[in-house]
Length: 400
Length: 120
Image 1 (spheres, one colour):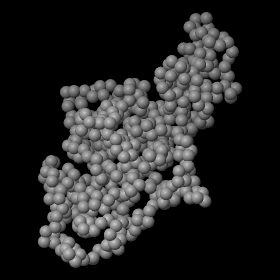
Image 2 (cartoon, one colour; image 1 turned 60 degrees about the horizontal axis):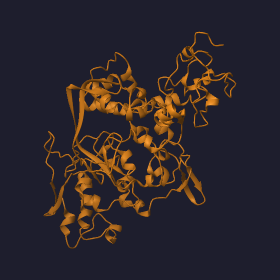
Image 3 (cartoon, one colour; image 1 turned 60 degrees about the vertical axis):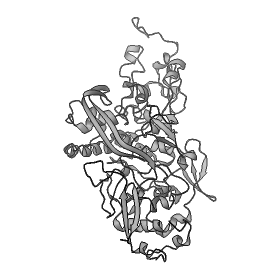
Image 4 (spheres, one colour; image 1 turned 30 degrees about the vertical axis):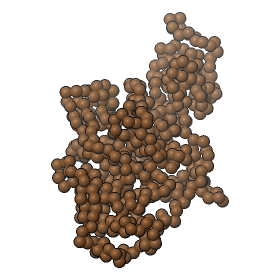
């Protein structure tokens, strides 16, 4: 069965077979265990996800065409999105804002007064920046994106980076992967996949600009150099503040935000505001349906009232209705958060400096290129949010 | 943007009705002179536009001075600013749970300081 010149030395004598009856010769060598049932080794083997040639007897031919990261959005039709797995999610995820970053890119083009690019590429997305010989070359706005924003999107090729950057991006695995590289190397435990996404995964990206990932869990990125309670992974200094009540109730981001808001619903949205559909009222006015008419399965109506089921541990929490004071006519134009949002980090006077002599890591090209961007702010505060009017509703706002 | 800092207890009356920063006027001091509401800014303008401070969104005339990045957004207009600040003057004497706020009427007259309600 094995050619005489092959260096391949099988560890087993029997031909491994999956539960489907398909032979999977990869398992002759690969003994890694997967700590979850949905993607169990005996069900999927290696090739269902990592491709290659599972019927080939030599390492060289077996490894032809394998992909290290099956959830890279460039290959997901063949892997996660194949017919028997998650085909419905391919278009949705690729059109999600986490994959396109359209809102961020479009905003930068307007701020840098490069409106022409937006007119020529009205649906510009992060994948366009990966194309060789792109007509988008030479844009300062896009250079800024590549260097300062370009690590927080699903197309990031995480395998080309180290540290925090290696934990972001990479398609589905950006959020769903659980496990450590060391466990794979030393204990032969392959990372597993989970639907129960901890907020720490989300906060790896959602920690800049409005800094909601920090504020939610009771952390504020202080500008008082040297006086802090915690250091963030990237060295930023954080002080502890009162967390959001939903955090104190043990709710993760996925407990409020729907699958469609996060992973997309197939629509190419222009910005996050268009994509969002839950509001305070969805739960607290017991509306059960989002702005887009989608039912929230985590809300459960009983004789004792409405409860929310936490997605991570399935514990039920009572969903309280607003107090009578919230219903008073004199404040009817106030959004819930106009009153109930206690803090809002406010960066006043954002400005950037560009030094063409220095270099900066381009997260799209994964290499240092000419031109260093540095962000500065005049001052930062954590105060009661300022208010403004949006479509006749009073809402909290922050510069950014 | 939803700040994700929800607390069970809402913000105080003063945090809006006596706070020029929350209304978008920026850091400064509100006062009343001859029945007119005045605002004295504490910040100096730092941008090319010498009429705008970094903490500012609107002026007392209710003109929005900044660009919003979402459709349908504006700062408070003059009528709204005055209405909000009038309540703030009352809060100098009356507590949050006072009956005058529970039964608030826009044309209410303060017998001690009638000029408050003639303001602007």
